[in-house]
Length: 425
Image (cartoon, rainbow, N blue to C red; front, top):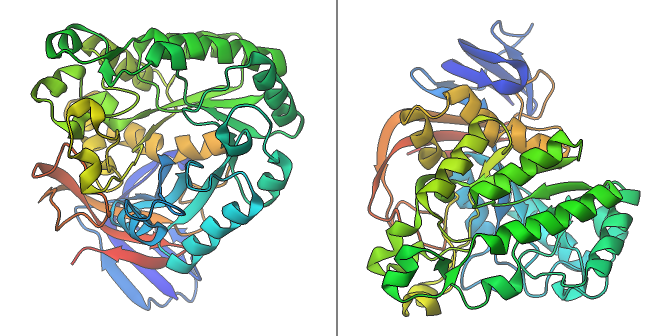
């Protein structure tokens, strides 16, 4: 199939392209930008005038819920939501039931994603068996079955000896290890950021030290082993400084931040609205400023959705008793565009944080419109407005604090391997 996307503003940070032009696709790959390739005859043409044409977005943290938690979401429903959000590649958390600590579960997830055909799903494997932090999972076998990296999520590995052995093994086989840093003892029963708002509301807080102490411990072990490491969903300004210092010492570490931590603070919890219950929690204004500074200075390599769909009953309880998480696939792009509107970063830099940046973290060839690359493409209208509600969200989870909010920026076309998987209208 031959497709022409005509008259859009093409932005590809990987090639330093930002210009009005046409893009041509042949047999699922990028064939040319500018002049049509010889013998090209479009089977389908899309008018992208007034819109942005960029690589398909890559989301570094999503919880697809399947297998085991299909009342919250399925691979089919959540990859459809990803396509509607312009996301063509998803990194899936291993905290399913059963967890991804066997090749059978890893292959099941990929097979069901292939059957759905809406987005690429790259599973993370569990770093330890059942994510209990005691014995290593079969990392090499999981990597051979398609796991892009390994994590214990927010299930801590209390034993530094076990952690060291895991990182040594991963370093030997050049496996990516993803940390979601949290000290279990310090986090305790907390449900929001420890600060004046938590005190006033009478809610147990999670101090910033619960993250920064664990980041520090992990960095020491990373330096000891030389493992390729990534810190996901940082929430504290001090964590950003620790990552910056580690890079200055030559450590091979990267980091990302969830979009809601760049926009919201703990003050949003004032009304006990459980839709603002997330882990890591929304932090202080100073922490948000530190995260934004880390984004601008490229200490933070990527922005992710940290997509965690929940069923309605999971959010219908007193704030502390609800399950944390935001359904964020379809709002990742429009919320990120707020950073451009606030003049924090330029649009090409933002797109880099959603495409090329995540691809480099994972070490994959993606996030580019280079000739010959897979035609994973997102076309969006940066001025189009839409209202987030139960009808407009394709995700099975409707748990977003932006419900009934009008957002600017809407995806009009998503291509996966040159095949339209989402068209507005």
